[in-house]
Length: 177
Image (cartoon, rainbow, N blue to C red):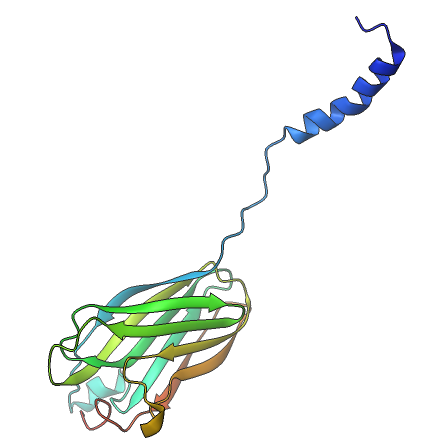
């Protein structure tokens, strides 16, 4: 038994702090947003059948379809991305810095003397609601002949979806229909 009243008073004062500090942290951990390329499909062919063409984007446009779940998942589909016909591996360096989501697409090799169009699927995970700029730069972006990177702004606060397209007239876009 403690006979010194000062020590007893200190222990009584400190005891709730010791017990309180032993509680498990029940807060949800914060994660940084990150992106992954989940799928690529191509070389695409375009038919002259008008029923089939209506279901797809024209070969003379490059598009990005996006779907946001309103919480943390942004799904992107890059439609009619230009790559070599024999690219080996297709990949992307994905970065999220502040409110800018950048996708720098690449191909491992240029194995053939031709180019064609591909569709690429991405998931951006742990993305908080907000306003973002999405930039996509493919391997054949060339400002000199006006093949510029895709760049657009989205407001991702609630569940939403949309499409952004740019017209393309240089090879491999256009004339394949």
